[in-house]
Length: 490
Image (cartoon, rainbow, N blue to C red; front, top):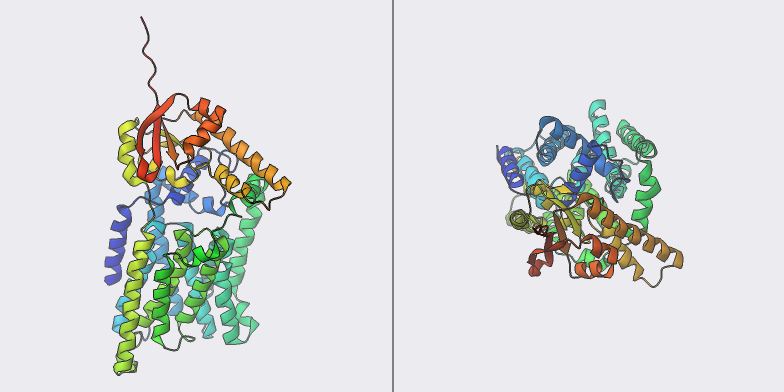
């Protein structure tokens, strides 16, 4: 019952909150694909095809049912979470031998961690990857205990792992570290020669083979563009480690270490190693995004939850003041870490508060484009207004990242020419999108937006018919709308 109640709370939470910017843009991309757009040709995107493929079925289903794609994706996320938890629990046979408190609180805590804690990271690719990987982590734990598992469960867990790795290859570390732990515990390579690995490899092979056949433009243009512009940009290592998101992670890790209970024979060690793998992926990506941190925080929270709840009958738990004090410490750190983590993952701005202002100055279902380095300038704002995004990219991220990389004195002349060519193409594409799409609203974000327009005569000419309609200096955002046509003279 506690798990069902928290599940209902999560439904209300996400019904009242706009979907995040990344998923919003990818849904726009999926709708364009359904309308016949050629991926990586008719729109500009850095993410590999898996980022489109995981949302495409839900965009198609939403169109068939005449509902909003956001609703279909949210429902799919809840369904995936329920399937993931059910599958992991069945693999672990977690109900047997647990105390009544554990049977009630463990599922409830898992629902909180997997559906409420992510907040604005809900339905992100990292969120889906974590949910897809959980049954495989449970299976690795069972294999370490040399317990048998059915072929169907093993294949299903392997398929989930393959999907998680297809979403982002960086997540291989979250699977590799627990696999090495399994190898260490069993001292036998046969523990890894199991059907789940064949299923995971089959999914990855099928996905890899489909890319040149279905998405040739990704290899020809999308991937080289990302490698030249987006991927090399990184936050300093100290900034990645010392972010506010490190505080809930540290508190939850302290809760685990404070438990001082044997971990090797419990899911705790497997969860911690997978969390370490996800955190390594966060560092490798180097962007410092909130959604990149979520899987590591969630897995450490699940490990702390296992130690905070008496998982065996009370008679089997060590008694005494020291044990009681340790349990209180674990629970206090767990609750504090979850509270701070929830605040952190909810701190991402979604621009929803600007929707009313844009609705006031624009016609219904406005056509929109942005002069901005960030996709958050227009997403999910354009979808909240049931508008249409007329730009081929989600923002001028190519121009921004090229400019940032050109500031590096260590670049070769060939690299500089490539970056200048990409920036010129981005600029020309913006002009073409404005002239073709005739946006009702142009979003300007950041102190350099107007300067960029003025510095490029062709861009300025394409926006000559637009004027300022609303500005929010505190957020460095402004909205231009088309000037009314001059009245005809008699």
